[in-house]
Structures are given as structure tokens and as C-alpha cells.
Image 1 (spheres, rainbow, N blue to C red):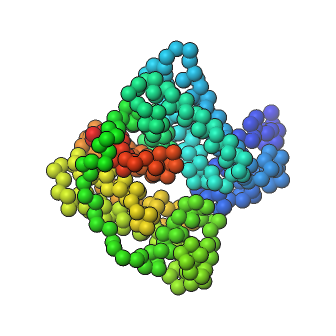
Image 2 (cartoon, helix red, strand yellow):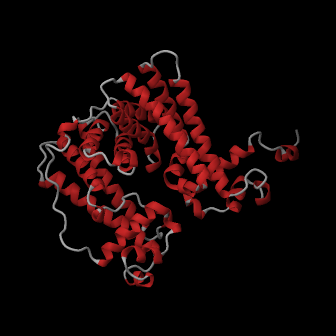
Image 3 (cartoon, one colour):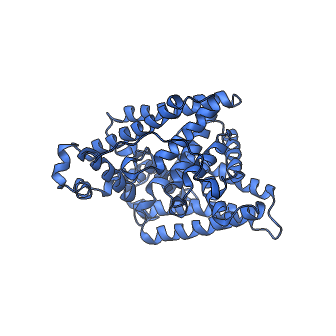
Length: 401
């Protein structure tokens, strides 16, 4: 075959290749920061050629996410649909497959977490229904393995286990793929074997939380809280300054007296979240006088969960969308996040010296992601003892219970 023929020969699965290219661009720039021509140029074709495979950009995103779900469903059915009673080997096989797919396709997890809202309602409904059915199978299997678990407790642990694999999208730390996958499996197994506190004691024995600020929040604080909630629900590009002003009870143009742009407001949200977490960490690590590193880690876990489950007016997401933040603000926000995570990592490497810094960081991000996800998952977020239960699960993830 001559060079010209080789160049003109189409890949056997051009659609999947284009989807893979698009998913990397979506993750790097955000869904709204990528155009059809960007995807085509990165793939080495023209825009019209891309339309032979996909109707529009949203259909590409849907293909990526639905294909990822296909793989999860196939792995679940292969490992768990058996005529015999499921065994630990069945569970381990499923976790290994999920771990390998998560490590090899980190961008898919990131897209589902951050860009799924851009799918059309039909695709969102399909993914939601299929995900619910798959999780129900996991829950049923876990209950057969652990008859001590109530259905809602088993479901909580399965959600947490799923978050372990989704946590790879929350950071860029990498180690050898085989070791990475094995570490995720170990963490997920600790989650699935976690012992939740007895329900009659979930509100007992909690340490006193740092005092909250009294009085009416300032107008600036109200804008931050309103903006964070709108960004979380609708995505940054879909929210206007007028929307934020209306939610905070002021005229849209008045928002500019406090923040020059949406991007500046988003950066302030990140700094505010960092301040909230820093206060909790200071209380856990110093004011409560922990006896050792293990106790200090437990205090950090509880302070983090308390921040996420605390009063809405004090809560602002720490998961800031870096794609839409001004370049000048990104280094500072990244430093704030890294400094916070580093506190966990330093303590964890002391408690578990067999973990190197990268392995400890992956473990910490798994714990943080579980807390982030479950406090936003409607099926579990209303549990009356969620604060204590989540802190307990995080202790198991960190292996400090």
C-alpha cells in the first residue's frame, strides 16, 4: 500500500476515534470551550466530515457517556449475573474491571461528573435510569454478601464505591496503571466492607463543631452563596449575572459593584470554600489537640463532612470549575486546594508508611470525592445520620478506623 492510500484509508472505527478526541478536548477546555471545528482539526479531518458521524456536539458527548455506561453495564453483568450465589471473587472481578476502565478512561468519569448536564433530556433520562438499575444490582449483590445490611445502607455503600472510581477525575496524580487499579480496588473493598454506625447512635458522640458566624450575611456573601448554587445546578455558562442578582434579591447590574465578572465571582467562590475548610482543619488539627496523626486524620475527615453538610449559607463548593476561571486566578486557587489536600497526605503517609506520597494522594482524593458525591446524591443526602456515617466511611477509606 502506497503512502497516499494509507493516508486516505479511514480507521475501522472512526466514530469511536472522534469521540475519544472530543472527550479529551471537553475535559481540557470544558464543553462550551470546544467547537465542532476544534474536534475535527484535532482529529485531522474537516468539520463537514465530522458531521457524517455525529449530528452535533451534544450527540458526541452523549456517545461518549453512553459508551462508558455500556462498558460498566457489561462489566456488571459479566461479573454479577450468575446462577450461583455471588462470591467475593465475583465482587473482586467487577471491581478490577471498573478500576482498569477508570484508570484508562479518566476523561469519561470527568465528563459525566461535570458535563452530563449538557445532554438532551432523553439522554439524561436514559443514563439516569440505566445507572439506577445497575446500582440496584450492585446493592442486591452486596446485601447477599452482607445480610447484616439494610437495603438503604447497602445502597449508600455502593454509591460510595462508585465514587471511588469516579475520584480519578478529581485529580491528575498518576502511578503505574496496574498499581493504580489495584489501589482503587483495595479502597473500594474497604468501602464495601465498611461498618456503618448503629442508627440509634448516629447523633451521639459528635465533637463540637467550630462556631458559625452569627447575624445576617453581607451582600457579598449572599451573592457568593447564590452564585455557587446556580452554577452547581445549571453550569457556569448557563448562568447570567442577572440570574445571580435575582437569586440574591438585587438587580443584575448591582452585582458588578461587588464582582467585575462571573469569572471573578467563581474565583471568589473557590477562595471562600478554601477559607471554610481551613477553619475546619485548624480546629481539627490544633484547637482540638489531637493525640496523634491517626486522630488528627479522623478530625480532618469529620471537619470536611461537617463543612459539606453544614448550613447552606456557609457552604460553597470546593470543586471549582477551573476551565472558566481567569488565568491569573488559577495558580492561587490550585495552591489553596493542594495545600488543603497536602495536610491529609502528610498525615496519611505517617499513619501508613507503606504508601508513597502519590498513593496517599490518590487515597485522599477518593475519600474527598465520596463525601462530595454523597452529600449531593438525593437518594442518600437526606439521611438523618449522614454526617456521622460519612465520617465513618472516610475513616475506612483512609484505613484509620
